[in-house]
Image (cartoon, rainbow, N blue to C red):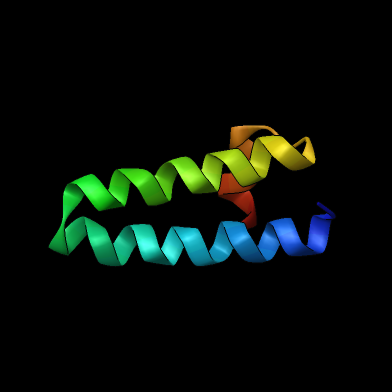
Amino acid sequence: MNRKSASVIIRLSFFLFLFLFYTDCSKAFAAFLLMRWAAFRVGWGERKAIYLI
C-alpha cells in the first residue's frame, strides 16, 4: 500500500467514523480500527495519521 492510497483510506474512514459515531457507535469503532490499520500499514504512527486529517 502506497502513501497516497493510505491517506485516502485514512481520510474516508475518519469521516465514516464521524458519521457512524452519531448513528451507531459499534460500527464507528470498526471505522476507527480501519483508520488505525491503514496508518500503521504504511508505517505511520497514530499521531501522524490524526494530523493528516
